[in-house]
Amino acid sequence: APANLATRQALVQAASSLAEGFHTLDSQLDVIATQSGAQLTLDLNEINQIGSQILDLNVRIANSVATGDAPNDMLDQRDVLVDRLAELGNVSVTTGALGAIDVNFAGASLVTGTTTAATLAESDLTSLTSGKLAGLVQLRDTTIPAYRATLDAIASSLVTQTNALHTAGFD
Image (cartoon, rainbow, N blue to C red; front, side, top):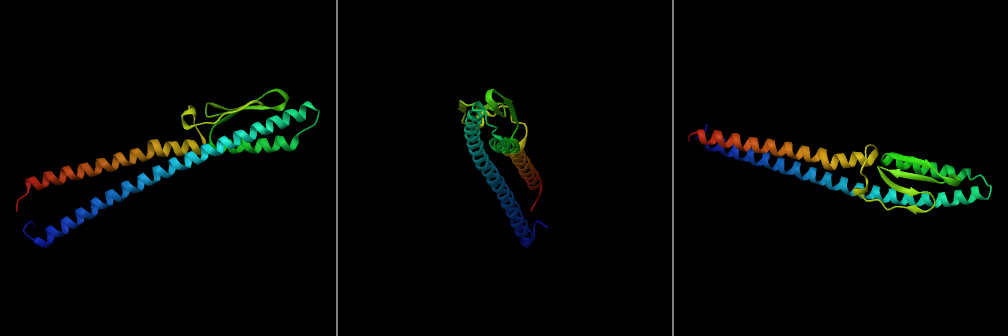
């Protein structure tokens, strides 16, 4: 009923509400992406702290083993830290001299025996395949952009089809 003013106003209001819905959803996706990035930064900081703690334990364990002691409590503490790293991403551990370990996290060297604890950045995580960090990166870099692209495609299609119908219509 193109001649009916109330129907035309209702259509304009519905279209405005739909457009606002698209904008709201896009804003929410942006917030989720931002929060995912912030959580990723926090988790990287935790990984670096754990690396420092493992290095400290490696030194204490090596000193203890060198003097003939059995550092079982420290070994357990270090195992708990390695388990926490495994929750965050893929970890590989190699045992070295005097009970010290080397820890690689997602393809990057985090701890090397009793000498080095690296500070990892996201760009260092070349082989991130599992854990919480992999999920966050997947969400931020793949899932949310795909949702946004789909939302954009729906909105674009709706605009194109509405304009085509409008052009073909009459008053």
